[in-house]
Length: 399
Figure 1 (cartoon, rainbow, N blue to C red):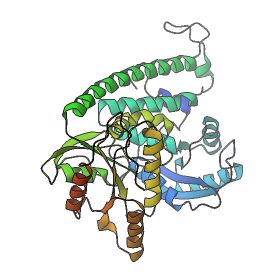
Figure 2 (figure 1 turned 45 degrees about the horizontal axis):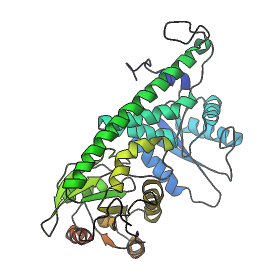
Figure 3 (figure 1 turned 60 degrees about the vertical axis):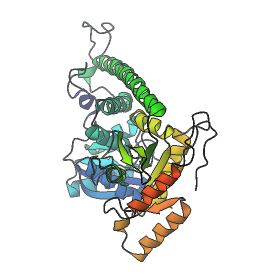
Figure 4 (figure 1 turned 180 degrees about the horizontal axis):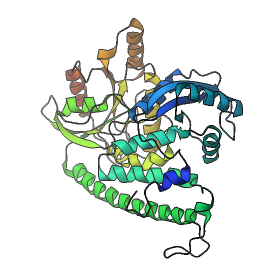
């Protein structure tokens, strides 16, 4: 944040050790779940998030609670157990699979002396690492500042000394208050820049709606293979990586359909369960693309044991948080991806069950190209249906 009214490391100074992840940390993962739930899937996802952020995972710890402890989330006894395990594994960071309140994070840091990162902070930092365009970088910075602002706190006499210098509101203003004002001004500036970017994007989308070909929009859980499928359909060069949130910037390319028509294919940001609300502005381009789509391809990692749950997360986000009741509903085609990773009879049975539940669907491998010709045929057939108008009644979502 240097050069933007905030001196380097300001947030880190005021938050102690726990401001953000820089990569290279040795982390102990702490997952908190209710007694009746299996924590393995959430631990695996938390571990993948940590790996994406460049963190070395040295161990895991699970706490089962029906309700969080207001002081430390996990309870004082569990804090000591976590600290003992951290010492055994030489961990310098604790990553929690839940969002902690400012007080809980502060208490945990004071009790353990370790850097405390919660799930929301981890996702925010991954977004910051992967933001490839100016607009994405602005949206992520805005999300980080909104998240960190209520977590600012003073550190002794240094931050409680009165200011009384040019640019402050008066002799009684503390340095902490000065910094909060600086952050507030930066947030306002970012909001203005993002509104301008949204207006420019809407002009471009308006031109495409009036004069352009139909738009196929890929949506799905993070790391479901959307970018690989995007490249396969468009001969594009979108980044492909075996990590979460490898794609943050919406990309648009042309593709030729089997009947000779041309369509646009849009690759979007992947979804994830319990997305930090501060990150919603970073999804604006994705939200707009979904609302204007001629066809939605729901891309599912059919090889994942959590494929059904991940599909429900995406469905819920699209149906309840993106598309409003009055919005027309474009037709949907479910693309059950990563066919090449299916090995055991149990995995094949799960894939077949999902293909029955999610209709219309096609089982493909974007990586090897298997069944992509069938996918193109189904896309062409779906686009023969009337494209929803903004004032139309819309389509019913299958499944």
